[in-house]
Image (cartoon, rainbow, N blue to C red):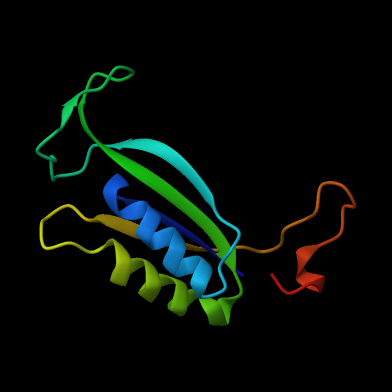
Length: 112
């Protein structure tokens, strides 16, 4: 299994979510975040929580089977990309296993 974390501009997230859902990726987690990368958005401002200048981003997280990862990555890129700089970044990590909290069953036994 693969974990995909993508940091996306807020004005592109709805488009990304819809495209992922249309392609069978329905389970994902979204979090509001603040980015401190090299690119500073035009609306960058001092953070209320940290002593840095930030640009708002949305962190999208999803877990999928290894063979589905490339399709998810391509979908995110195609729908998050803009003509300007600072579109975000995607990280990929291997997931050894996952468990249902209620039953304790391993997700290795199921298709995600």
